[in-house]
Length: 552
Image (cartoon, rainbow, N blue to C red; front, top):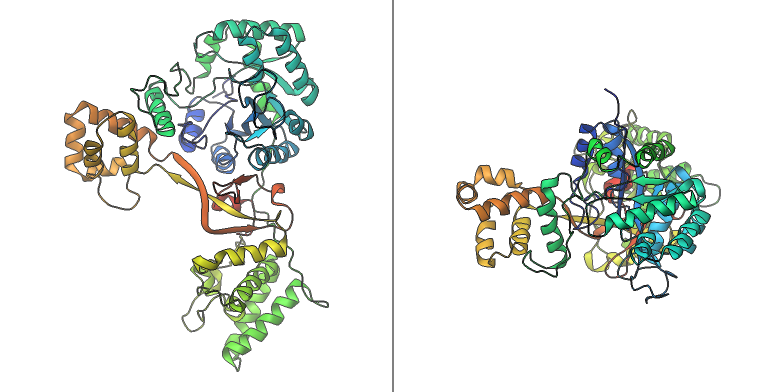
């Protein structure tokens, strides 16, 4: 069956926090159902979901287009006030990576937004865009883009100047005027002005739909999601809301019907997708550089420490111990992970020297005699019959994972040590994401719908107390909850909306114990984020960091 002749290039997933109502897996399923050859991810100001999106899209045979919707300051990203008669703190600009260089520049821009330009939103500016333009394609954005903002005010000459500025920065083949039609007030007039501008300046048009949810009937759920974000209810007339129910994943046929007089704007979606060719090869390893004493390599120094540690542990080494140690050291050398063991050994040694309580190690690492000899773990794998291959299988080499627990009160000292040793640009804490679980989403949706707290609380308490239970499971297991949903229309709506929003990402925070260490600046591997307390974290979660080969 042939592919569709349209590609969605402006799409908000669950990682446009409390705004995008598209679960990544369902997003990919919807793209596949519409036979799209490719699909973009362009979340608000961040790249939180791009690795998971890339993996899911590739699995389903859909070409993943990696991007994000940047917030661009009207003047300098360092300024914290309106400028040039423009009241908005930032404008929207849709960015896509054409290639590896573009992907690296996206990561740098997404990092700049949080670490340098944050003012209500993670902002970049045109100076940063010009510096990191290589490999990028830019679309001019939605009605909150600078060009549409100026056109809405009748300032066509200024809009032309801004369009020329973007064309100059990105190159004429890499800047497109983005045109949308969600039947918003004044949008048709702005679109006519956009078309005039495109003809006058010979700029290409591209049609998008600023997707925030999957189906037209999800608009109500999305409205409630925005209420959860802003603390409002659907009864508040002045709440943040979309004044149209057309921000859904429209089919190619719907987009053709809407833009039938601009076929080139549809054709350009496929042309852009064909120009974006990014290969994120997973499986590589990016370890920090551990400095060994003169006369040693990483492998010989690890072997020296392992044999020395084994003698300290056992005294006399039996043939079984020697054979196991040789086998493990050979496997570690073959896999190239000696540096990994040395890095972990070093910061555990530091913690013990400072009398910082250290746990005995968790998970499959307990099966490693080398880890036991180094003092990384506290369990003798030979005594308990534990297998090294569960930790590091020579037949299927992947990044080993050693889980170490440090005293909560003094964990920061260990983080400070590795930051000083390997460089502040090479070390960061790890982001983690909270999602909307069954009980929480019932409470959130009920409040946003304006239902009394006591009533919503009563409904939420009908969800069985099982770990990670879903609303579907709760309805099956709780007859009282099911009866309420079947007999009371407002509860039926509450449950229906809650099921649409269940599992979406609520907020980003810092993982309690996760730290990532790289051999070169982390910005070369992943974008960075600034947490609520000013701590620097990755924008990629723990599993995604593992996929791209970083030591965590």
